[in-house]
Image (cartoon, rainbow, N blue to C red):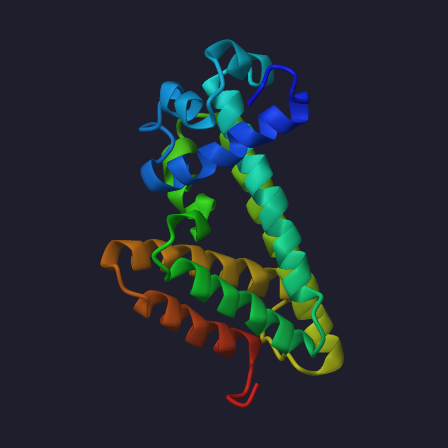
Length: 200
């Protein structure tokens, strides 16, 4: 990176370089020196874009969820019934969390428990991001009730929260076991909560 590069470009470059490091090692274990070396920017530049490591962590989470929510919007806006769109979202989750590529993993799963006790600003960034996912799922479930493709026994927002919590927990258990079985179980539970038939 050169000193003449636009501020937003350098800032985004630092965030992009840092994400796989944090997904691999966690927030506490990654030092600023490692991030700066990987991004090839001087320490002074870092503090020009981020006031502290905590502010940097908050920015990483906001950037991650910005991209993730855009991806979620694209999946839930595809052609087909709401049930098909919801299954496309959860199938995408299953595929990305079972590969060998760390960059595809869920940053909320990786950092959630670690940073919530360390930083209130990072905790609220996680809360905003995860809340955004639940809101999108709830809207799609509501659409499924309207088109008849989804028959949840509970109110859409409650079902959306239950599903998201289930998949977050399953992702963590899959990491612990190094086995996709918890995610397969989450998919079975998802179909049951949504009242889906096997043919969907």
